[in-house]
Image 1 (cartoon, rainbow, N blue to C red):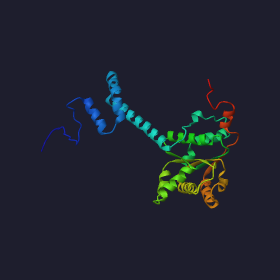
Image 2 (image 1 turned 45 degrees about the horizontal axis):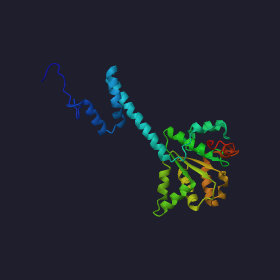
Image 3 (image 1 turned 60 degrees about the vertical axis):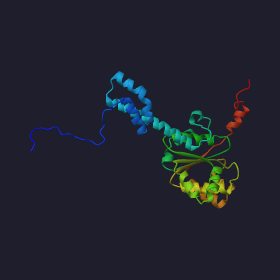
Image 4 (image 1 turned 120 degrees about the vertical axis):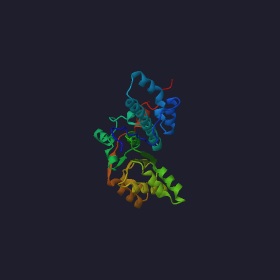
Amino acid sequence: MPTGNRTASITRPHAVTAAAGDPLEEVIALTKRLKLPYLRKALAEVIPTAKAQRWDPAELLRVLLAEEAAGRDATNLRTRRKRAGFPAGKTFEVWDDKASSIPRPTQQALRNLEWVTRRENLCICGPSGTGKSHFCEALGQLAVDAGMTVAWFTIEDLGALVRRHRADDSTAKAIERIIRADLTIVDDIGLLPVSPDAAEGFYRLVDAAYERRSLAVSSNLHPAGFDEIMPKTLATATVDRLLHHAHIVVTEGDSYRLAQATSGKGVTPLA
């Protein structure tokens, strides 16, 4: 029986061993294998700094992993923004909250996005040019910045979706894919009569999202008047589900676009 103190030999599978060649080249190869592109990009700058400032190895690892995390976050943000399909890239940076007819406390309450986390809906209705689409898109951009997923549609986009998937009876599956997004925005309802396919697509979306996901809708008509542009039975069923857990915001006033046009602010002055 062995006696006295003895240092145990611990063998770990896949233990890291010293590289026979250039350690930096080995690190680069490992970042490629482990798919760490942002960490790899940071090596050239971070390692000389770590040597010059005699960083603790844990600090070096922390900085490199932070670079990878930040790079992934930025890529995910760009991907979510692209997939949202926003039409114009409008944000609250170019939004004049004082000029809007939406009360400022209401604007602020909607901008905190708690209604999205509660899976409530938003209906913004009012005359053309009163900032409905801009406000909806800015909310969508804000949601993306907050880490949420967003999908943007016009009501005729939904009609096209129904026609595309009717042949193989996959419309329901297509709608289910849409409502994976935390927030779905349907813009510009009420400008034109709604086609039967679009009315069906809108109903299917509202029904599928009911109490599961948030919808934001902009319209020239109050939802109570949707039976003027789509079949009454379908409109009734759609509005019933849409408004049950909805915040209704009514805009008013003259068109911003017309006001800018008549004041000469809609274009850059000719030289």
